[in-house]
Length: 476
Image 1 (cartoon, rainbow, N blue to C red):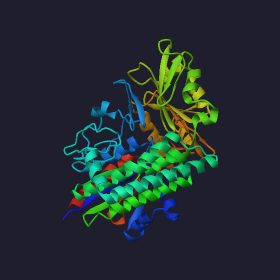
Image 2 (tube, one colour):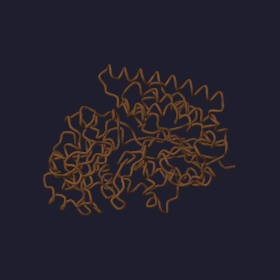
Image 3 (cartoon, rainbow, N blue to C red):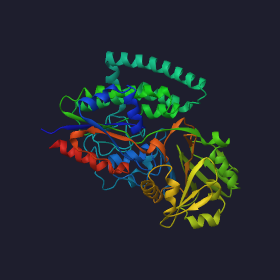
Image 4 (cartoon, one colour):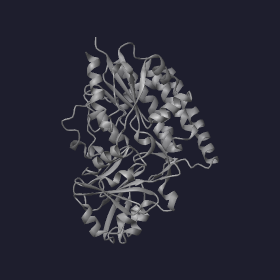
């Protein structure tokens, strides 16, 4: 008789962070999986950008091309594409994942960015709106009502709500007293995630297992939201890992000899400082100064420069953690590097001279062009520039792939590392999306007996055939 598969996606936990939490005793059940059930921590590289939509598309479909960040501007349809609150991926979804073999085809895909061929999403989708009606998709209410109707669940939820509110208030006060500046919007998001979404997602997974779905894929975002709010190095974030460990234990207890369990992450997190915090001004204001007469609109931010109707041009800056894509308004295709330099000769060198910027990237035909510290770099010379962030031979291929996307910005900026912290273009205490540090190195937790090898996985899309193969082998 074949076995079924459940895959738990723990957002934002790097391989190093997982190992630190095991050493600190914060994840006792995961340690049990390793010590008693023969699980191994397999490190892999998620690729660039180190964001959930990019990585999860690769894991679920084997294709994450043309997903250049958490947010981007679609030139063809003239729409801002983003995930999370106000998700708009449905406006362009028909252009993606054609001829792919989704990982959860016929199964359940819960709290994910994409439906991935699943028959049911249990009414919980990370993109906030299900743009594809699955065969047996139910509303979130049909999951929530039975959950709260159970006195045990209701009591647990009420207690967890009170405890989470108290702990978060204490963590916020303590962080402020230590001179840290938690990102208040993410503190609120973290509360919603811990109090509501995480519990409901866990219950939906248990329900999917009771109903015999396979494979089941589910996303848990408590750690990532807490790390955005307080920074991954903050001691308060350890609680989120204990919360995750408890969830893994509860789901594992439902296996009943029928299900095999895989736990994975999509990217890591790094401590950050905001771009404005290092220079006193946000990136949009700096761009408007470099482009006199242009109106610069930060996505999730303010507009700078002349009012609409009086500007001689416009730029949209889509900010995703330590990554920023800059799009010149009115263009149907990406501006080539030579045209860019002819129109705005001082812009790219000026951006590259900013202390807050590690790297500027553009495209000259089929060739990648990098700028570092005000100097243009091409070809093998880029290896020396990239060596501070990761293996340069691997990183150059990851960056070149991103730079080949038609959806990429005309100019791409990567935040610098300053004193062990990455400059972030958003207001976050912890972030990802860029290059360098733990954000590029997530993990896959799987049984040794399965013979999985991730040493050559340099992009999340390369996990898809490994997981699809495991899914198919278990069915035999």
